[in-house]
Image (cartoon, rainbow, N blue to C red):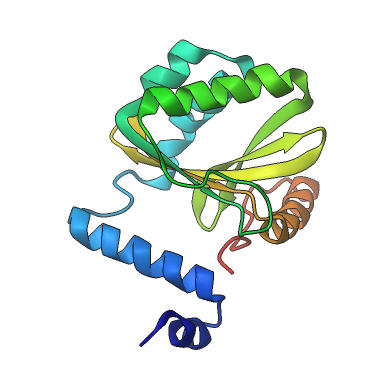
Length: 177
């Protein structure tokens, strides 16, 4: 079965089906579960990491990222994102720190449950710029997924507004399509 056929079966785009296959192969190669830490156990360290992002605390950012951490960006072919995976906790911390220097007070972050897991919603000048999900291995972050696809973010922003109105943080499955 080629990617086009897979996309038809799962009712997603061809690029999305490629990404799903890639993730599945990687998970099988790694031989370990994709999520080693429960979502509830992630909330406290993710809040600490988000605070470090918001305040430009480079030392905390660096200490919370595993040395072999990776960051995966997804702009959906619509907006600019990283062209390939970024490797290394220190490099990822530098990226977050650079974003703090560039945007400063124009940035606001929120913790929300997206697709059943805690995530960070990052707003720049009031607009949702990205949804970031994190994978932990014990106490450190090993993988960051940054979703920047504006179509997916628009759905998520609508759900986040509704969640804030009802004082809920669960954004359901906004990014799964």
